[in-house]
Length: 513
Image (tube, rainbow, N blue to C red; front, side, top):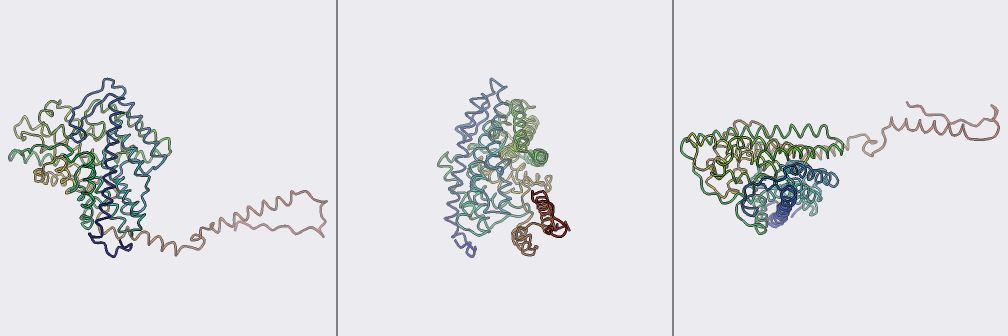
């Protein structure tokens, strides 16, 4: 591939995209497997807590509360402590959620992500979430796969634009693989970098990489939808469409609240926890609170993806107390803000879908006695997932398609469009990823920054360009040095004092001016 990017056609990108997709699929498979092991060892064996499990994780399973509830917060805090120390020691940039870091790298330094981030992010996220922390898998998968793409671009000598493309298609392949949603992952890669536009240029290349990653991940864990092959659910007539519009509005408000709460915690922790000890204590203390909250409300501990599948079942949803159903989205918002906002390693993309699923389930549960809800909660839950995340991530199309792929039901696309449009009306300019640029045209200004820095360096004074000491500081240093030399001469032992006629010349001091 030409290093200057003169020929950047899709044909030239087939082999690099396949290679990046395969590596991203392997990374997603490693993350999924390690998370499954950590959940089994830490949360289930040590703490005795068995969370909801999706069909893709070895068969659907309902919640089993712990026989020793005191151990759940302790295990969550211990996992957060180990993961935070590990991340701070090897790669501090692996803390927090990974998608925003990947977006920032794509805009500012696409070939600069360190290779060690992949391993550190994988281990830290698996330990944090597997011990009970509230976080998602897509953020770690996105950062791991984007780092793979960045390293490949750096090692093969790609241009800046090509390195950016490699990073973006790696991100798309990782997210598409972990959710078994290649089309949604490719669309997400094109939409996620900007608030008000999408980069259609990377879409064909991202689709190639996402399909390759999906094939690799599916070869390891099967190709069944993440949330099971859900049966088709009806809308339920005019009343059902009104309910979906209301779900969209409430889910949009929940997405906005989710974003505000997350950044409220994140901003305060970053401002106050500046020392290494404070950066370790913050996520550990937050994990204690999350562990206690998870004992009260289901779906808080871990990813919560199993809860999304559970609330698509009419009987399981009716069996839950109405108070618990109403508390689920709020508890997940608080749990994720504490876990990831305090510096724990995990994603914020997936938990936002869990919040939307809780909103859809709560709205269906309230409307079901009134006779205006559809027979199955599948459609309200699905459109709540898309309406909560799509507008605040500024990737409505990619998220909507991804939800349909996760549930294995393309008939959800139509109702989902209605809910997403209603949600967009209440989210405004709220964004879950602050590294996003406003439009694709702004990419030119960001790309020009290195050239502006180089020009400023050429126009800088010579002492600054060459790394010399500032002239004023230099004169002061010479003055201090001369005073020390004069003191040494005056205090040195010698013969009898000289007369005025043969006294040696005294070293003149150089003043500070």
